[in-house]
Length: 234
Image 1: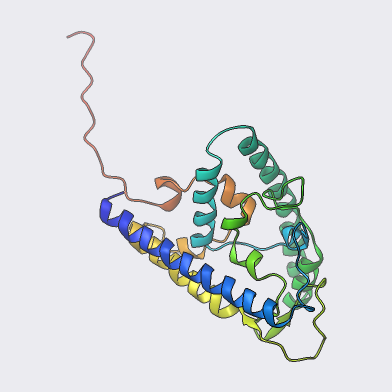
Image 2 (image 1 turned 180 degrees about the vertical axis):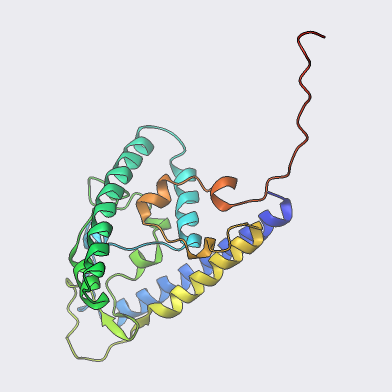
């Protein structure tokens, strides 16, 4: 990867960091205004069992943070083992939901079922604390305050927000749009040959196990001239 591409990539990750800070501020503002309603507390791991996928920018950000913090050692191995277990569970669930769609079950009903499923995040420690809390995805950061996507509201079942009441709501559609834009920028900055790279979404487990190398990202490899092999006969 060239220095220009590296600089462009770091600029995109900086943009992601800015969005993260903005989301954190929104959460803090809502929590400060509705202290009785937002009941999040340390070691509450309800959100650490939710099913969701990461856009390219977030998956790469999580992977980078993981490599920096757990470059080697027993903890890294354990996390990757947990990630493999979680990914197998998710694969089975996704196949089950795919079959439901094939049977004609509506997307709304399928998503309702998805919301009920729980799979332990591989980054959740034995003390129910996140092993990469400072680098957790945006979905984890906003869990606990009112959100809406496609016009439908959602709140954590453990919070005390009154149904039907009006509260400040974080619109996930706008956040997802910004993440998608950043993912497109990554594909463009890298010169990926995969035109749909920015459409690839993966769970946290896969983001940890993936190798975001030249092959995965579809980087163009320069054709190097092959060395001529000297004949053993001279």
